Amino acid sequence: MEQTNRAKIEYLLNQLEASGKRATPQRYAVCQALVEQGGHPTVADVFERVRRTFPMISQATVYNTIDTLKELGLVHQLEIANDEHTHYDLDLQPHINVVCTECGHIHDVHSHIIDALLSEVQRQSGYQLSQQNELVVYGVCPDCQRQACRARRNAVVGIAAHGQQPDADDGATNTNGQANTARTNPSFLPSRRRSKAGNEDLV
Ligand SMILES: [Zn+2]
Ligand SMILES: [Zn+2]
Image (cartoon, rainbow, N blue to C red):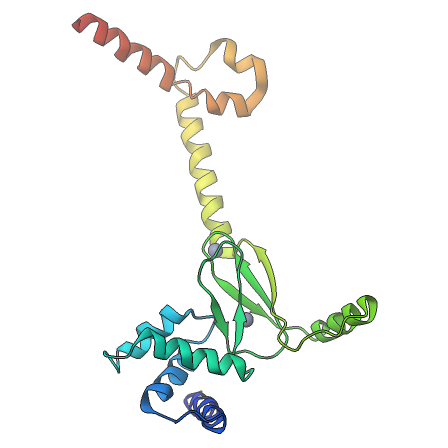
């Protein structure tokens, strides 16, 4: 693992050098941060990491290095809807980036059918597809699904507990079914009425 990371970093640095950029320790650190961070970091993520070794490095140096890598086709740029930050992807194999609309986590899915799918897209559309296609789909990740489930369960338990109170009754219940009952939280209404009465007493 360590060995492959080192090879990846050196490959990126060699490519930068071949494009006319000097292989400075700062540029090495940017490549290292990109490789070690993995996933889909933003410039800010890489900057934070590089700053541990080079506290004086500017965000512009980080940005320019990543930008050169992007121009060389060694890093892909990932634009995600409703995310103001650009993410970068070192994984150049065709893959689908599945973005969680709740927490923003990006999961890579590789499949042998992606190549076939892109060929089919090219065949049907007649378009010459570019090499840097970042495929992005959206959904809710398993963690966020579990959280939503837990929140829903807690809400149901809360409603059930309230429902057992003696004055959960009258008109509202038999008009419009469950959703309506949940919204007109029965224990809430009487207590508000009570506090209003209390205030009137004080005036
Ligand atoms: Zn990706
Ligand atoms: Zn999520």
